[in-house]
Image (cartoon, rainbow, N blue to C red; front, top):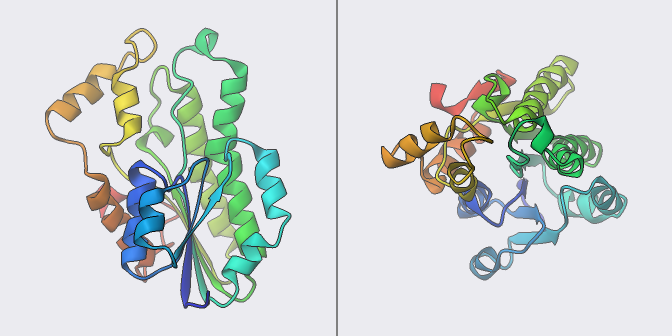
Length: 245
């Protein structure tokens, strides 16, 4: 498939990731979706332009095995610009340390940090001479600590600092931004509202935001994020918040 721009979106089967994939495909930008599952809706709507890889992004060995194949460079062949959107993420485990299963901590760190960093490095290595734009989906939790969210806060902060350091490398053809998307009406938000107060003392804040209609619709926010990614100014700020322009 030869086209000027090609995109990769992780966690494309639901929520914000699905909306991001749709926003790109509607712009006739081919998408390689990477997630544990498969989106029948995207396959039906865009059979020729949406490729999908079923891969557990919380398993670094599985990611490494896929990256060892020719799949990524073959997909990127023929384009002049690559968009990588590291969207997949999880808020669990939630609660104080004694409530955190160490294996759940490891899975969260792999999904939220190792997978984005592995894919960022792999995409740049597989696309010499091309323009590369890397977008980490961050969170306000990267800069503001929340009780019960020690793992989530730490992993999102890691993405922000990764973007800062990559920007300092000033590698030709590589732009990066770790961008907080605001609070969006997704399954993750529903899970947050369903968390017991003793594990997440700030739960009521998110309940109140939902009741007040303060959650952004995934499709609306995805349009803003894609416009930000495609703008000439992308990468001038390695860490940003979509709500601040």
